Amino acid sequence: MKDLISFIVGKLVDHPEAIEITERDEGETIIIELRVAKEDLGKVIGKQGRTAKAMRSVLSAAAGKLEKRSRLEIVE
Image 1 (tube, helix red, strand yellow):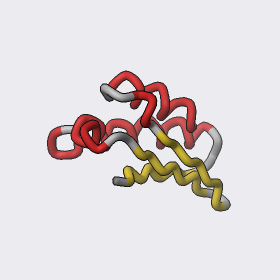
Image 2: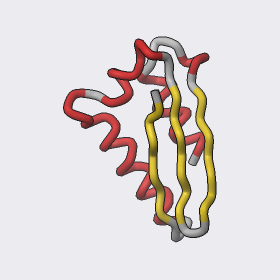
Image 3: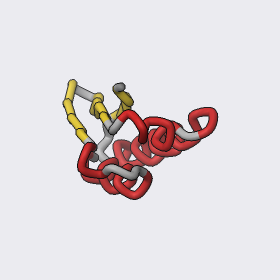
Image 4: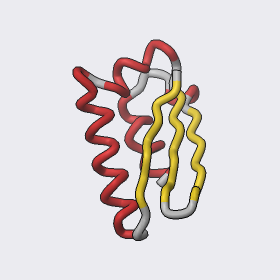
């Protein structure tokens, strides 16, 4: 899951070296915290949150194969 988000976000941002991803497994839920450079935050969220919503959809589909739930948190 962490590698999937890293790949997607790495293609979107101008500063891929500033990407920090933390993955926690809490029972049935996988929580992924994403931190990017401040100037890349808008690119990751997208217009009206469309990019973030799309990443959450892809993450949810991947977690479904593992029979788990997923949650993506974009942290400033």
